Length: 161
Image (cartoon, rainbow, N blue to C red):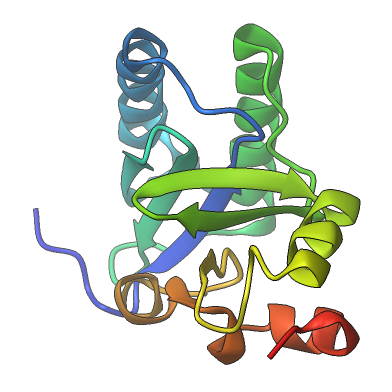
């Protein structure tokens, strides 16, 4: 199934990496949710992904039907159930994800600040911009160097050159 580059995306970042078996079980649930997801009784053209066993991504191609407030509420409620079932946190916007070599790690804000101060995270460190709005941005602006991300605005005073 083809999805437009303008398809809307929602990224939920787990505070913990999922084990492969958990990710498989969760992917089954995400696929079921996407297949049944509706907006005002109209089937949404939706799909789900899990990347790096840490990011849960919902994608809706609104050419068929647009995601409404009610349908977005359904997805949020679904994700809250996922949190409980898997013992993870998906709604902490101050839990930052970054790459350490090939590994994807997360840190709460205070720890992320310390990593910046120590130079372990620097302007070239790849961070994840979970604020991307569509599929095109997901593919081009989601994994970016710290210097090119919104993070730089928040932590400008802590950057070690």
